[in-house]
Length: 374
Image (cartoon, rainbow, N blue to C red):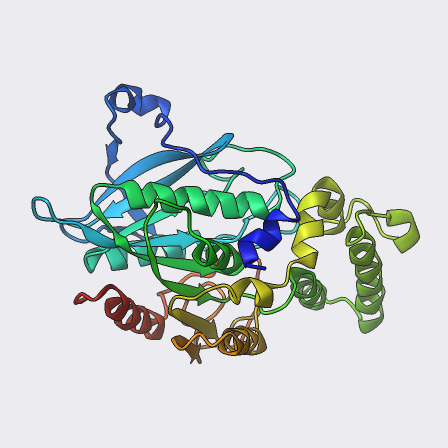
């Protein structure tokens, strides 16, 4: 059973729609069928930097069934009638409600910097706000399949852009976004573009419940909790996740605080966490038949080297002949170069993108789209 079909068996099917009207300030352009052009400057390490010469950025909005997703498409300077290969950037669900523990937070700064870098090298790049974040619309009680459907909608949108060579699209997923990328690549929408490669950066090779449990232990350790306190908390975590995996959340049985910043999320979005905890990324990636690049930072405190190795082994067992694994000694979870000790943090780190990462991406993407990338 292919990954998307496996998810369909678990969740309600959501389809991808066409383009929606842009934001109110560009309503007149939307009525004319045009997307508004904006002047964009991106921030990564706290400073503003201009986009590369000749690159333009457009704020866009497209439909994913019942909601609109807002994003930015970066377009290089192209000659008349010329089209360029494209890269679609996919983050995790980016759940970050106020006062709660952030889950699969999007690396917004790093994605903006990556987009500018890749567009400066002649590629069209699309990045968008996940549902309930930024300027995207919100619908409560989403499941992982909803986020896959959003990725499918984004893929359809970028494939239809007149600047894009739809036969050459790379899909890049970060953290949980890697499973969305894998599901999309395993079964791309009919009549859309062609996925010629998948890039998985800091993607779990285990069910996300195990990842969240590990994060909870690290978060408590950083907060100075004792071994006994951490053990008590993880025991409650295990009881709750076991209960949730059967479709329930029993705080009383687990003797857990229903106002805990992490546990309360389990109750507020049961459907999402139920499917998150039973979805095995190793099964999802096995449906990818295109070239795959797996990149893992050795200073990533969120996802470990074993995760990347598990992903590679799973793909190898499916006889995918073009799978590359790159371990980067200085890269953290947010794709930044870190010279100091590995530090667990919920917030995106600052500093430059790891130069080893950018070099690898340039070379690998260039080969897959069969064109010279600077």
